[in-house]
Image (cartoon, rainbow, N blue to C red):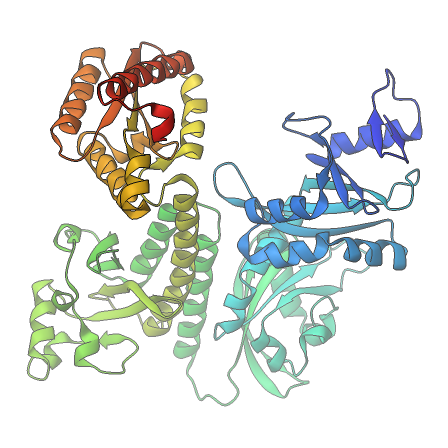
Length: 602
């Protein structure tokens, strides 16, 4: 490849034999995207993608490209930072004025499955390039970097928790700097406990704070970092003049450990109470690690409530979620041995029929009742509801998303748990659950908006194109229906677009009476496509005839239809063309009998 400075053109050569070729070949091997930036003309040219979508693409306005990437691929929380990073003046300043050969930032990037992964965005200044010419590259991040980046998603969450928490990097025993301990992350509470600000701890060697006179503490950290052994201890923090409880656990990367510090100087507590705090913190860490483990949402939450249930010897741990119709349903439940599930009794329950303990205890953040019998006279309505579920003791915490109630997390009939602070455990875990549900709801909302038509409540053209790609790789029986509203333009012109929208919604409602909405696609203004996989020919014909009959018998609408069936979805495009052709023939018959040309009515 050769870069020409006048037009910023790359042309092919038969062999890689000069500096330009070596650089480009290396870039193509390392990165999944390579683009050419021209900051003089403010244009971008796409050179290479690991997916093989293009080798060279015509020039694109740089501002348009940045906006497109930010909108379609960058996580909403990272959009502003990405735009600032990609802004031409930023590139000039950071590379030219600061005399750097490259700049790099990390942004969460959308995958095909709708999830986000961290990717490295790099802008290079090649030695052979003319002034103002740069290469913009994108690549995956290594596992250690990804761990640190994912950690950043939860910095605020950890900082808001009532925990002094830190992640430490230790050197191996054989290292010349074996006593060096680098603080990778520190919560606000920990920095205050150490009497320092974050800049004095994060990225610094904290061995003097923990080591020197406390070799046993350092050994605990090494055991966690290199052997995966978690442990607890109490030691005297001489610099601060305080006694500290320390909990040490392994981190996600070998050579690192996580610690929780607790100041117990002013507390006159027994060994039993200390064990209780350690056990609670240990269980909280286990629950948060499970939620952040990367497991599917449902599996992770089920594991968390199992951990809580087994640790507390409860009869039942549950999560009740608020639905779109403002009713409540139990969505997760763990039951101890010989305890029957009650999930089938907790479906679509009105708020007044729930425990609704907020009405009984105004201003209370949580419901904690060690013995339900004590409220029989003072709160008879709540007592009756609790007894109906065989409740003897209960702890229940509301789950909020940005101040809005979205559900409850709780448990009933706890065993003897002297080594746990039950209320602190449930409150801390509910805090993490709130974050997890908030993240899931955002992903679901984004996914819904990306594949569903907001007017008709069916899927959109983009979703259909993804479906067709999948069907082409399979060999399933497939039936395709094309449906097109007749007379929509006339209705829009004479009665207004609101009337036209009502017509489309009416048509889609009729289709949804016969076919699952996830098989229906609105692909144009008045055009719908229905794709039914794994259907026998006669059953498909029956569905088509029933749908056509329903259209014909509904007053105020006229719909042209065409359908075709095939034994293999690999031929879905041919089947679609046949159905589309038959639909237009049906439409032509309609307009010939109604003395109106299709082109005018559109």
